[in-house]
Amino acid sequence: MEKNIKGIIGLVVFVGLIWYFFGGGLDNQVKSEMQKIENQVAADVVEQYEIAKKNGTAMDAYVAAATVSAAYLQAKDEENYKKWKAIEKEEAKRAGMPFE
Image 1: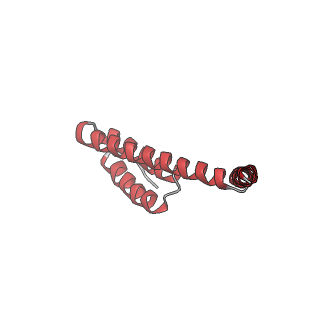
Image 2: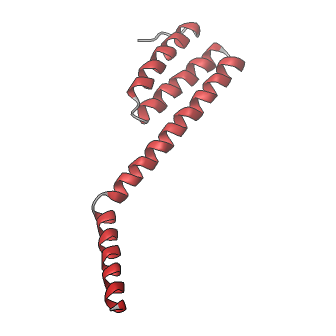
Image 3: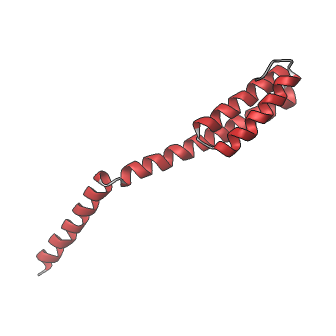
């Protein structure tokens, strides 16, 4: 009887693992982790922008703002991408750069 229970538990675990790896569970976890990484990169670049704006030239702030908008584009965060494109445009004006 105990042998049958162990066999059933083993089979359930095996089927669960097969579903997880081939049923999309692993893909979803990878996508989730990638999104976290992309969001963290964007947050780090925002901090870099703040430093550049505070301590650098107008050109430094413009380049940093452009990097932030690119990071949000990479993260597929449309709301923050639009926000930072507007900031990038303002920083371009301050730096005397044309912006379309």
